[in-house]
Image 1 (cartoon, each protein chain N blue to C red):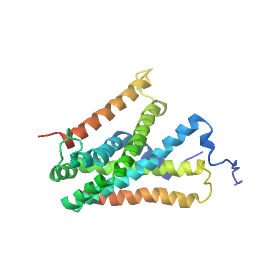
Image 2: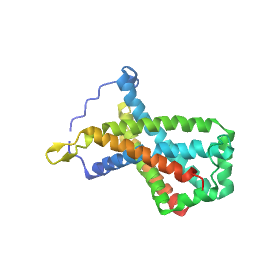
Image 3: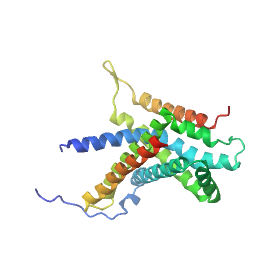
Image 4: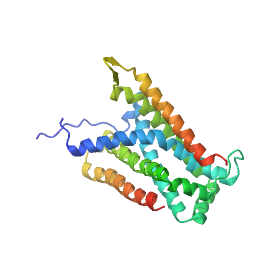
Length: 130
Length: 121
């Protein structure tokens, strides 16, 4: 098989156009999402060790406020992933009702509603008072 | 270009992970990374302090375990796929085997460790 031709590109090609930059930010969101999955495992590990280790972790985060800042940045990137993912859905999934194509906006809206409901339910489950 | 079964599986995991990450990861980051440490410190008085027992009960309910396992494993495969393909776009054309091993191997390792944590919690 012939060797594929690879055009040399500087590694900073994505800084040249706004659209390329946002594409790269979307890809970068994967680093934050994967990083958070690891953090979630650390969180669960502390819970597994019992209440004192769990409180040690929370206390350490409170004492190192940058950890909450990093979580906030990760939240912004994760939300950017959600928005780009939902908005792309009509290009991947075409729903039909009989002969008619269902407009993509319904599919997108349904996912935004699900995102909102799931988030609200989880926050209420954890924080609602009895 | 014809895709192998393995590639189809990886792209399915990419799609499933994309949906799960989009729906669950932002709210989980908010809960475990921002709201719980803040509410515990009393800095946000409107957030009630959540007891460990209550959090543990939630995390160890059947639904809690399934949600946590899905939220760890599937997004890791989604991210592995993104990183694998974006490293190529950034000029890392060689060592695809090694990069793939690190990306997808990391996702498999995370699935095993995450599954163990979630189901033995």
